Amino acid sequence: MENIIKLWKELNVENVNFNFSCGGDSMGDTDIEIIDKEGNFVESDELIDYFDNEVYKKVDFYVNSDGHYIGESGSVYITLDEDDDEPYFNYSKSAQSEWSEMSTETTTITLNDKESKFIADYVSNINGGSDDGVINYKKDFILTDEEETIATDLLDKITEFARDFEPKNINGEAEDWFSFTTNDVGEELTLVDNELTITIEQSYITYSDSD
Image (cartoon, rainbow, N blue to C red; front, side):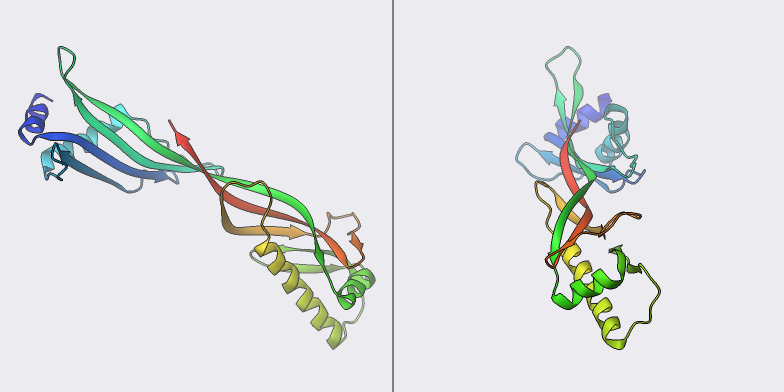
């Protein structure tokens, strides 16, 4: 460490920034910036190698994701403290954690008369999401060409509505994943005056300061 402190002073270093991004059970990308007292970037493989190893002894990084916690990213600000009898390096982490949250909200979608009649006559449940969608029927019957077109357009309409839906009171970034259902299994769907009740679940990303 004495040699590192000596080299630090010789290069007139002000601070070292260890930039990182971790999550998914791995450390991810890192890079080290060495900055002198004039604000210039300094090249030193010896300092980089030293801090690239030492930072993991001094700072905790949270790499293990669990489906809710995704990871964190930020920087470790490294300075030389000479106020005590023996100088030492101070490591200060500034980072943000990334979280995957879920939103579930019930709303209504407006249908036309043909769509409403088709649902009232034949449909038990409509559900789907970002991957696929399905209409479950409450009885056996033969679809006419017109009814098949209504069913296809109806499923597309509801899927697009759910994809573009913006839930209330969410402070975050929407992800691509979503799902929807008109009713739980065994329960009746709700259709009143061409307004079909639909429950939409969406995933979104939030950020918070990390320790």
